[in-house]
Length: 205
Image (tube, rainbow, N blue to C red):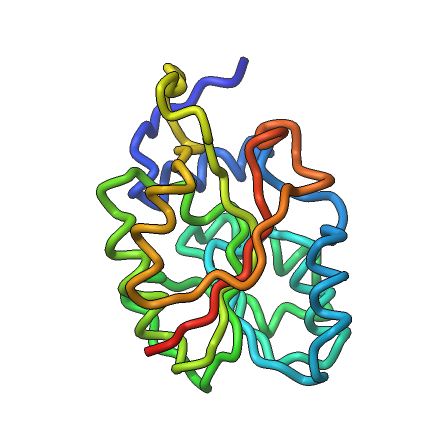
């Protein structure tokens, strides 16, 4: 079991240490099938933001489709690792704090991949505020949410990842977004097995 001195996921050093030691159990080896299926029905050349990007394969996937892309992370180690792993797309990967991030162009999509569940519950409203600020009316939030349905028996393990019930997620998003898809994920990383759902939310205000 790896040991880390940084214990606060609000701080970049928390994530720096985990990337330095290559402890990234949330990472995906391949592009998820749910994403591939959904994107197949879209018009080409969309614009997308990936917050907390790490070195996920979706960076190359979106870029190869011709999408306009920004992939950001506030961990300098994560960004360096992503640029090294994905040199052809290094220009799309940037070090930035999501909560203060200024979009260089309008986004059609924000891709959620283990970002909301990486942060404690008291930051969720701030995450939603940023999603709303960065997406125009009609823009979509798509991706994977770490949902725990049995709220009567919450996990005793400290996060991250931090689970959220579907009811709580609905309460967070429904003032601004309409849910268009909500299905069980088919190929989640082990840490998310059985508790991850692919969802698409369209901003209506």
